[in-house]
Length: 297
Image 1 (cartoon, rainbow, N blue to C red):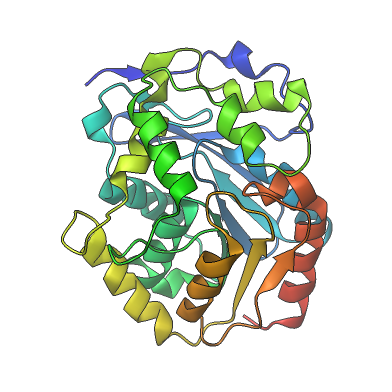
Image 2 (cartoon, rainbow, N blue to C red):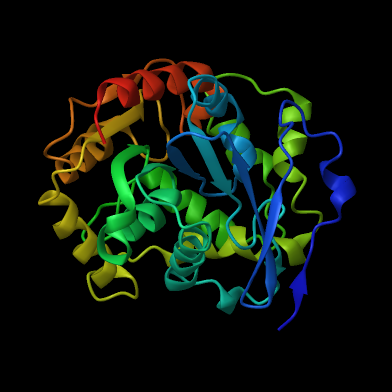
């Protein structure tokens, strides 16, 4: 299997992301994660087409409040190695990579914070895979794919765009998914892991991975995770952007809220797009920190 590694110099000018990566070996490749702080662990999972850089603004308040932030780059993203073969990437493998990180670090009492594809991966991990390692769940602009969910027209356009562009541009969904205008330096940081089309298999493979019928691959796991969460009594919190073009607050956000019957009312982040961490990351970090402080694990 051919595996690519993004040259380190591609990350030399990444702004406002001072933390050094930790590397580990998994299935013949090198995977990266950030591990900062000494307190209760908070696992922050990114999605498509981002990497750990997405969480930098959210991490600040969490670290200041004494929490430990563990922020992996999924296989094919960020500083993690990138298998070239599109067929390598599956829902099972992404989930297994996260489970292996939890086991290798022996994390317990974890608070999951997930976004985009980090949701299906993280919520499955925290329900039907290793639920005993998690104490609280926080999701934003994400959910589970059961094959019964209805995808928005904007998402269908994005899927078709990805399918027709092997060398897919990273800047377009990033800029289009934010309510605020991003600097060129921030956009370049999101592009840094992907110097050419061969490095972009991870990006290409997430959209077609979504099961759109109950019989599709991955749907059964999504259904099992959903049934687990509906009966779950762990504290949970759901945040959603008011202007997400891919996963609109109504109906997607309000529907996802049903997965968390014990959760507080959905928290709407005003003037934010799908990448709400870019639009209001510090505010989100403070919301999460206050919730953690008042919510026993």
